[in-house]
Image (tube, rainbow, N blue to C red; front, side, top):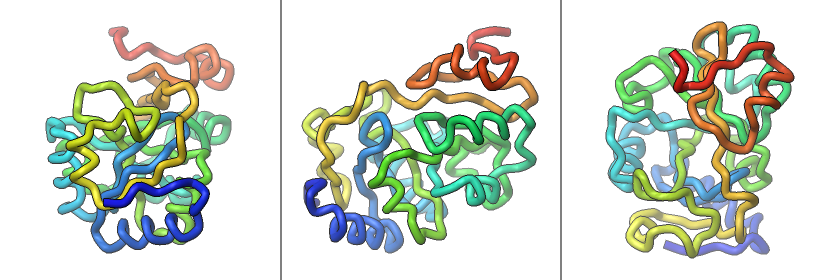
Length: 214
């Protein structure tokens, strides 16, 4: 395992990308917190990330892609509301939950038919995704149930020992995670509050439900 500094980004990003494509797991900065990632089409890597996080396999993992065109390849029939949120907030700190296409492994979805997808607005993420033909798993770099880490020093030491590469870009923003919105039906439902508020969402989509509503 090697800890990398942002000042050496060109060589570091290429090595991290090569590791992802060859079956490695990395820790990397996102728009909000540090993430744990690998090739989202590699079922062995999916299993490995569940094990590293000690995460219940019934709980899905999200993925990140490089642009809106690629996003649409991994989902089924985005709703009008979903399209509006995509155009307004992506790239950015928003995870949208869609009905998954048949290309998405059931291991990622916890056996269900929904998948969370992000298009990050972080230069390191952009470089990792540039030229990649696969989406990258995007989940916070913490044991399941622990707080999301905003800097490398805050990541569990045992977890760091289980990955192949670490990109250290210093402290991340506010430390609030991405807002998660379920757009698998016509009315969006907020599943997790984060960087983007319900008020901001409602400026784009007239009606937004809270996840704890019936």
